[in-house]
Length: 487
Image (cartoon, rainbow, N blue to C red; front, side):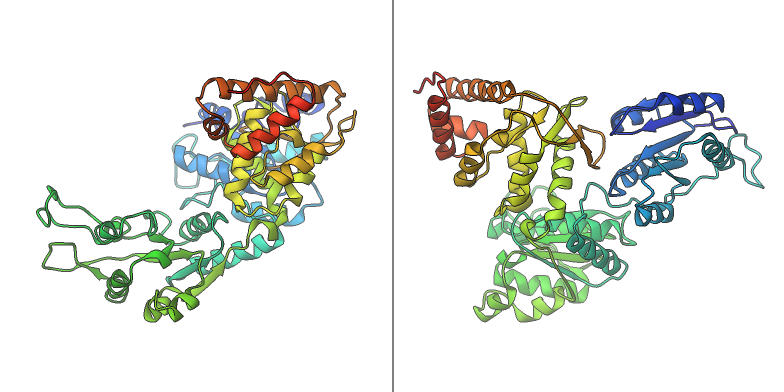
């Protein structure tokens, strides 16, 4: 891309409100042409047109990181101007350190401020001293990818993220501990992407998902002809991760006899393929994860003590989701962005927010994702209500469905789908007929699933709920006067 030395075209990304007419007029008076976009996909389509990006951030700098990664993938360097509320000093400092060209309070878009921003944009496009090429950019350089699609908003999570980023700068082995579904692999990727190995491969292997007889082959590979069916050589996970990071999930499930071979590979930094006679040198950084107590596993002689001390140089504990409530609603925003339909704006009612935050989440982030997927199926309008939240614990679902609904909808949280991971508070008016509409839509979805399957168990599976929850939903619908046909 070779823009002119004077920045003229600006992409304006604000997931929370439209571009004010007064601001648009000020931009036009300065000779800036602005195109508003609401999603990263839209922004990506017009990157070749733009000379600068303006983005509004709320609460976290995740959207800024996503923009940086997008620019890195497209191999273009555009200045990014961030609009941030004046109370969020730490966020402003963070994005400036990450490479933002300019930060301006989102409530102070006066003409003098715009003139300063334009001057900064023009300066970012000036050719450097020894470069005579017209349009050469003097924008921030992005040497390596930054961690993306992660949510660390709760103070506990922020502390964990800071530790992970610090240990990432070393070469020590890392052991991640935490319950199933809490996000250990996400943290492992943060360690990789924050390390000097970020441009190397990240190879993940689940030790519990592979048959015992295949784990050794998956780890170390094999030579052609090593066994029946080995028609060509195979590079194992160690070779694939050479120069990068090897992530071994559920390492406690690894058979004891393979633990000895893994220990030797880590100590010698060499592996031997199945059927090979010579060793191969490998350069990998190991990150392991487990949801079990490895010390108890050592007492039970299920895990080698020497391997434990080799892989646990630095231990990071990922708390269950119930212990980091500040992450719940940002995760909901992320999941709606990931799974929602482009262009669809969804609201989360205050009651639904309360239900999500008060639930214990025994299944952690994986269970949260299931609940949001079900809500997207059940919600035919633009507001997710408690009636759309089908928890794995049917008793909790019943409690929220039986809760009295107000005729006037309370304050809602707005999530523009595919527009970034930030949150915004807003309001939505509604009336009692909305609840009836929700029930009708829910009935239609449930009955369609029943008609398309041979049993209620299959229908429940298709809907992503338990048979017990389906029986409860049908009974409640029948109590409310709906005609429910069962097979």
